[in-house]
Image (cartoon, rainbow, N blue to C red):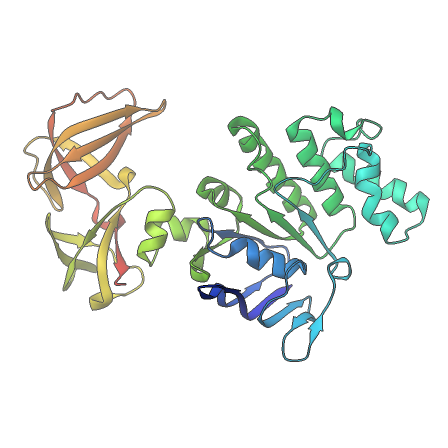
Length: 361
């Protein structure tokens, strides 16, 4: 449905040329929910704006459903209103002088659609987002969550080929944000609209996406399903940006019984090598939930003696920080009904199948 090839965006500054986007290539399938995830300034919103036609790339090729909407070689640059897509901005861009109905109807009126068809399409879109009874209400009388729904209804009312979402939940409070991300995902699954979602929030990306494209410094670091990128990332940046993780430098020693053997500052470990990195591996990643907290003096593979130095109760679980004899800081979690006091000495065991090798930088 959406193909991007060699996309580049350069900005001249007094200090030289800034490469905001560096030769990105990507294909997004029909009906897919694809998320661009990364820190501020990584190029994700710039890429989205190029897809929308709100920003002209320096170089590259963008096609929508097999038709070029931008091609730097042939000079094609289709304007935004002819790209057959919907977009929801971070600010919602709701017009305060219009009613809910008028806000949603606006793009259809601009396209010259018949009034009876506009009424039908607007009613359908408002019902989908749960605002069927709000059509006559002024936009200024809406809560933040309702304004977000109006913006979403306006984006889907034209049944465009692609829906572009630029951090649309970031202005909502935490509870409403969690509710809206569920509703948004359910709506996307119902419509099967190809969706590109931009966020810096890892929880949103993990909860909503079919595929996550991790970006940093204008380039794609790696991409995969939420499960793949959380449990078996390939790169150090991904491991640290998505979720919490302890990461150690390592020296690859070889393989044994289907597992990799590495040497770390904590000792020799058995680890998994899902990407068959072998000697190209430079780090071991362990998620806190993959660490088992055992009584002091316990023996076994990948065991390390440690002392509790910090504990944080967060409801269903307690998060712990430990220190080893070499002053290495380690993390683990336990059910909240288990209470380990500060200073308690324990043994930590890193599960080999969930201790993952990462590629050397």
